[in-house]
Image (cartoon, rainbow, N blue to C red; front, side):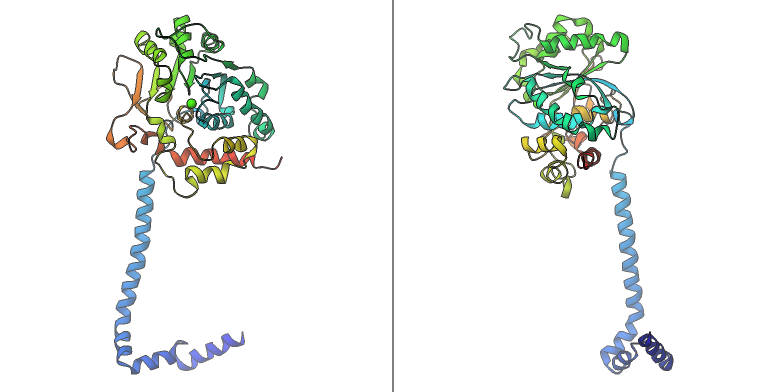
Length: 377
Ligand SMILES: [Ca+2]
C-alpha cells in the first residue's frame, strides 16, 4: 500500500507516468526523438496487427467450422433401432475384429443384436466371440449404469453361432451351417417385427450365400453391409454366387471405403491410431484391456459397418454416414459400392474419405463411453 501511495504521489507530483525518468533520457537522445515521433504510428501499427490477428483467428475458426460437415441425419445414435447380425472372422489372421467387437459391444444398448456369427475361413471360431463376451460381462455393471438397454451377457451368448469353416465350393454354396440357419430364422422374424435384418459381414460371406440359397424368400428382409476386399477373396465362389444369382439382394460392398477407419482424417495428437488407444482404451475396463492386448493401435477395419448404422440414413447408402457413402452403379439394382470420385480417395483407397472425414466425431463419441469403463467399480 505504501509503495502504491509513493508511486501515485510521484506521478501526481511529476504530472506524468512512472516511466518519466526514462522518457526524459530518450527525449535527449536522437534515437529517442525518433522513437517519440514514431510511437503513435507504431502504436497504430501494433493495434492493427493485433486486430488483424484476432480477425484472422476468427476467420480460420469460421472456415474450420464450415469445413467440418454437419452430422448425418438419422441412425442408432438418434434413437433408431436396428436388428443386427454381425458375421465375423474374429480370431483369424487379423486381430482387428477383436477391436471391432469390443467397439460394437460398447454400443450394444443401441442395437437389437440378433446374432454374432463366427465366419472364418481361418483359425477364428465362435469361442473368440465368447472371449469378448466374457470381458463384456465384467464391464456389464458399469455399462448398465449408463443404459438399461445393454443386453445381459447371457442373452448375447445365446445368439453366438458357428458359421462355415471352409470356403464354398465352386457353386458358391454347400451345406447349411448353424450360422446360415440362424440367418434364415432371424430374417423371418421380420414377418412379425417389420424391421429388416441388418447383416454386417466382417469375414467371409459364405453363410449369407448359403442362407439365400437355402431360402431365397428371406431376401427382401435383408440389408447387407459387406466389408469386402480380403474377405471377398477368401471366398470368391460365395461372393460370385451372390452377385450373379441374387442381383436383387440389398447389398453394400465396401471394397476400399472402410480403410478410412485408420487411414487419413484427423490423426493429430490424441486422435492418432496408437495414441488414442494408449490414452483412452488401454485401461478402459476389461474390454479396453482386451482390445489393447490384441492390437495396440486402431485398425478396426470392420467398424465402418457399425458406424454406418450409428449415424446417417441407413436405407440411403448414397447419403452421408459415419460409415461411408456409396454410389449405385445401376439404378435398377440395390447394389452400392465405393465412390470413385478422386476427391474422396485417401491415398490409394477410393471412398475412404467418406469415412475418415468423421473421424473426430466417431472417436470422440467412443471416448465418452470408454470413460464409463474407467469409473471406479
Ligand atoms: Ca474381419
